[in-house]
Length: 513
Ligand code: KIV
Ligand code: ZN
Image 1 (cartoon, rainbow, N blue to C red):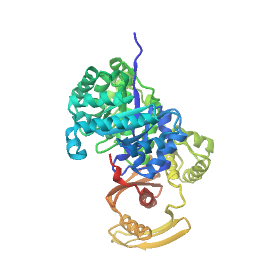
Image 2 (cartoon, helix red, strand yellow; image 1 turned 90 degrees about the horizontal axis):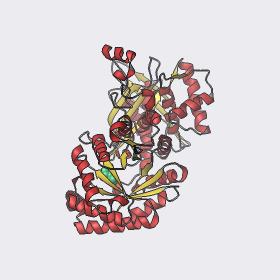
Image 3 (cartoon, rainbow, N blue to C red; image 1 turned 30 degrees about the horizontal axis):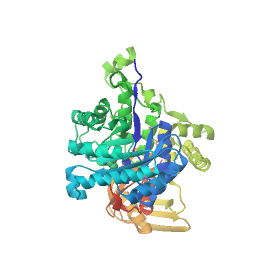
Image 4 (cartoon, helix red, strand yellow; image 1 turned 60 degrees about the horizontal axis):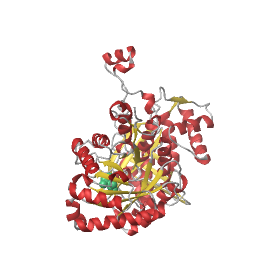
């Protein structure tokens, strides 16, 4: 019997995932996620799109310089400036990769690029050659490949490999493909492209029809050797292929696919929680693999079956994907080492200063609450990561009066570096509205609130409240989170988190994919 076929997992949470509306992350948050992806043992981390903004460049460069264990990849359009910038960002990685893309479908050629097939072929060859001049590991993506004429797709793929691409990625950019069709496209490429054996075929599926995982599995069945995916399936529009789902499908049905990945599956749940808390994009309860109900058995018949024999109703073990039996972990007598240990298991690698900050808050919380859960630690660690720069607005104190007769007065006292400001607002129909107005007046940033959610971070009536806010500012969406045992304080912190993200964003969106 031959060994199972190894499949590379290419994670694009930091690039395509970050393109989810409102999911933009700051440097510190990207570094946290990069560390979690290394711990998860993904083969490739697509760390960003270096030409898109100075912030993107810096994040890719930092990740390339400081993280070892995975290939670090930077995205580039098929032009010299993008490719040079991508190389500059990844060149200090132990294993760098440049990922060059150019659209090939008729609709993109005609309306977006205004280029003929010949021009696309020329640009592909020139772009791949330029990248190969810098780096041995070059990936080429014919964007919208799934809607590209087969004959032309074969030509582009052949020329890209001839020019030196070591991976050819087949994106279903708009999530239009269906499983059998995409599988047969991969099969067709393997049969018709003469030099196809010289490169790894990769698959990159979007989830517009809810088929990204099924389409990727079909591509693997037909010989694809790399899957591009994101944690929790976040990404443009309906998102990308979900990493945890595809990995567990390959593992659970190894009898059928006869493939393996290197993924440390016990890191899936902590990584999912980390990405969710950083991006503010919640994981639906019934989400496969990592949702809170993914292993919850409600029906009596199911519970009875489970007690008699687990496999009657369970095809995977919750502990294999990182669910712990109990998440009650620490109390007021727990020490710093225990806290650091638990934070690390949850995906947070805190440095000395950050650990000290979390420990102080943990002690205060443990005084208020008897039991401190994993969810509390995630909330505290996340809150600590937000307190990074002196140049950001922070809450010093607030005062609130709100009555059922409709009077709402919020007074906030904020600090940014050496500046301290206090203002009062009685605006609007409730305290949240008044808090927005007060913060807008102090910071000068006027936002349109698109979503506001309040939920408990853990269980019990003394649980911490977690506020998540999404706003629109100058045509872009921003998200923020705040946590406190006091829900109004959590809300104010979430608004400030949004304001700080807006202040540091400054991304120029001219380099959109
Ligand atoms: O969806 C897509 O086509 C992409 C490419 C840049 C690979 O994300
Ligand atoms: Zn994509």
